[in-house]
Length: 377
Image (cartoon, rainbow, N blue to C red; front, side, top):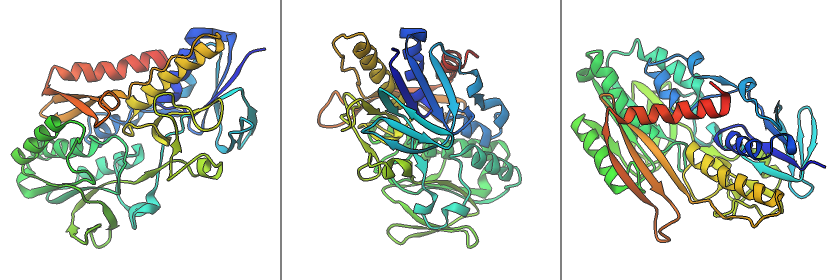
């Protein structure tokens, strides 16, 4: 009888896991991938949409193109998980499995920051599209970028947004009539890599972008056009780019799988406290940032473990906590930081690669290689 594997969530982690299982077993296993959405898009594409480099329809990849032997995709909303019985309930039925891999990502917690539900934000495709329309008529004033709390998705993105905003306003000839302020709940733009942080701080200074470190946004008042921080400081704005707080889906909490908002796992193996149940990516406390590349790396480690278990082989422990982040520095130049969270037990480390136009090819290949691998496009 075929082993049944339920993969919950079709992001970086879920799709890579299913792809590796399909490559290893084909129709020899029964893999079910469940996601409430009908399509996927890369997180970095939201910035391109906001600044008019592309359109939403060009970045959306339909799950109908995710076709792998041994894998079936179901567009269903998960309502409950019984991690002991390994049973998943959705709006369309119940699914049972021999193994479950939770890769549901993190949900935006708009309610965590007063006023954020009504605020403009660029972390959803709809939000980035809306701001892109607003930017076309923006001519002067204060652009404020603020984050609702840590951790947050894709840590370099707010810094990228500030630098790309400078370029956008400069190209339109209105930069001198505008101010740009970036507020982060971090001590530096990229804490794991001091060299990358220094480069970003230098880029901010050169472009007269104000950077405020170690501060969280507590409330945003869109009508009064002001943001209040955790220390009581108030910043006014004319255009607001918000980054919402995040949390694991509430359904995971109701299922008894979370602690302090996320699913605890053994970082090197991604095992939860429930036998044969794994968790990867943004919903898990896996010891890495909330970004797709780290979800993918964790999923690859789980896939290798499951492949070995199904073949009755010794189970390898391969989660390295490593990832690559590309950073838009403006002027068409892309930087890169290679981050390692596990090798040094004292602290994470990062290797910085100077921004260049040539690095854009690497970033484009990052996206195109996964489009081809997952969607055949």
